[in-house]
Amino acid sequence: MTANLAILGWCLIILGAFFIALSIIVKSPRTMMRELLNVKVDRLKTFKYYIARRLEASLGFLFVLLGASLQIYSLLAAESASGHARNLGVYLVVTILVMSLFGFLAYRSCSFLARFIFLRLFRSYAARYRFPIHRDEDLMKELGDIVGIPRDEDETIETFSKKIRDKLDLDYRPRR
Image (cartoon, rainbow, N blue to C red):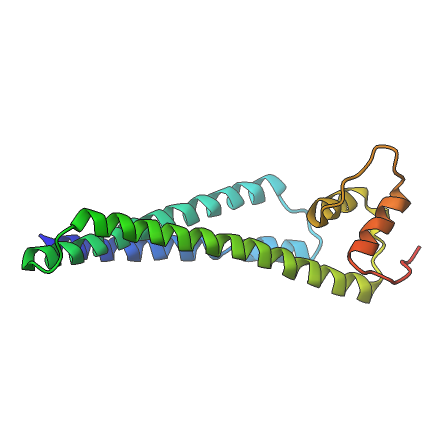
């Protein structure tokens, strides 16, 4: 019985890896070529594909999680059958809790690291190309959210862009 669970677990892990690999492809080559050539891109289809990729990644993770859980269960069941392990349920619950804790910490670390890398890259390119952030109000609002600068209703675009430039240490004079 445990061998069957182990085989099923491996099958689910392989299936999950397939869906995760499938979700990594963000854009089709046609869409990328259209963007490179400034040809009209179907934005709604692009968004639909984005949603599909997110669902595929979630489904892949679910399959990997179920497969790994079956693997752990089959190992522990084999151990308890031989008399080495007594509390199969406790081992399984503790293992899942520890994995969840590590997963949560890794997720939060990735989120923090992605923000750090994004800001570093943005600083670099903005300084290199002397990007005028004050010309794009939507971009300024997004940057303000990312770096944690609230926007007042009375504030002008120039003062808000100065706050953002100061926060990001952008000391260049933007092109007009």
